[in-house]
Image 1 (tube, rainbow, N blue to C red):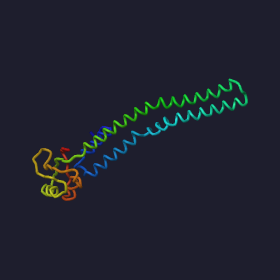
Image 2: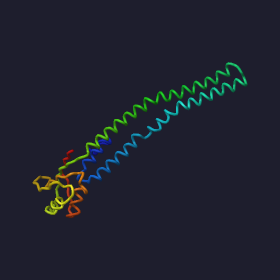
Image 3: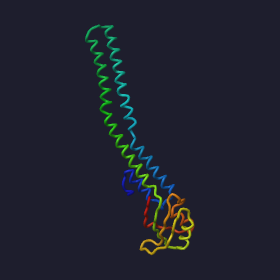
Image 4: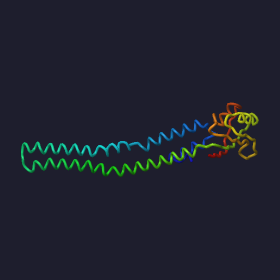
Length: 204
């Protein structure tokens, strides 16, 4: 799942690392993904909104300048041609400003809708990763009694038992919200042994 590039799959990937990391480390990784992807998704949307808001006002400035030119030219050369030039400028700038706003507004609304939909998915993924219970299987190659004892004494561990499995020899049940350290760090600190997580099951 970590190979996918969309933010939802990356958040889910980080959540599945409970056991490899403690809950705080997982939440920090998820928050970092959220911040980075939010920045990417909203990049440029503020500029687009600013252009939409300013375009009619820039058109209005052109209108005012056109009217000003009309009255100025009438003072020098009071004929229809001089008056028409100023009115032409006023109309062109107004039309240009309104056209920019009218064309870009649907685009802005569409992009904003996509961002909101993606944010809803991210929020849902974040809620789905609030695991209340987890069961993992690990394999250690030495000091098995020490590892079991260290895990039994650790905060957040519900149960530890030795198992006979082709790939694992210990099964651990724990509450992720109460896990102060990752499973591998608990074992490494207490017994100076490296462990390998072979299976992970998470429940809400």
